[in-house]
Image (tube, rainbow, N blue to C red; front, side):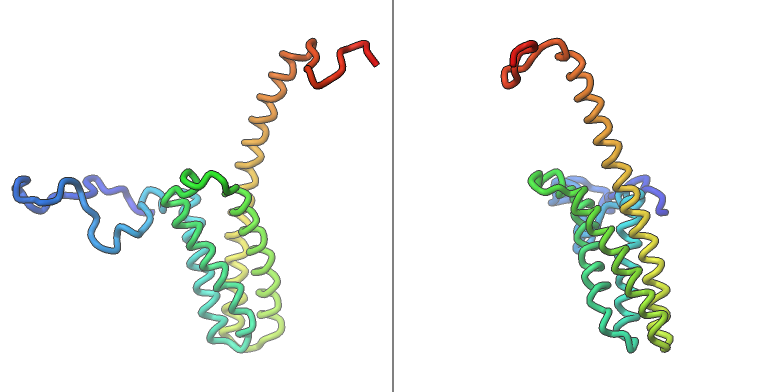
Length: 188
C-alpha cells in the first residue's frame, strides 16, 4: 500500500556536532503508531481493516434507530486496535504466557458470528438508512474477520503438522525400545 521510505529519518541539520540527540528520534505521537512495514503486511492490513470497519459500523449504529447493537462494534473496534498494537509492538514475544494465536482466532470467530447476526437483524428489522448502512458495513466486517480467522487457522494447522511430523520421526526412532513408564514387551 505504502512504498517503503528510502531514507526513513533524513537529518535536516547538516552539522552532526550540533545535534544533541545520539540517534534517530521519532517526533511526538508518531512513536506510538505501528511501523509502516507491519501495516504493509497481510496481518497488518487485516487488523487495520477490522479496526476501520468496526469503527464505521459503530458510528452508523450510534446514528441509527438500531442503537442497541452499538456495543458489539465498539468492543470489536477496541479489541482490533489492541491486537493491532500488540502485533506491531511484538508483545507476543514479550508475554510468552498467553496463547496469542488462539486468542486472535477466538476474537475473529466470535466477531464474524456476532457481526453476521447483528447485520442481518439491522438490515431486516430496521428501516432507516443508518441501520442499513451499519448492516452493510457489518457484512463487510464479517468477511474481513472470516478471512482473518481462516488465515490464522491455516497457520496454526501448518504449525501443528510440523510438530506432528517431528513427533513421528522421534517415535520411529524409539519404536523398538520400551520406555521406563511402560511395561516391557512380552510382560503382563
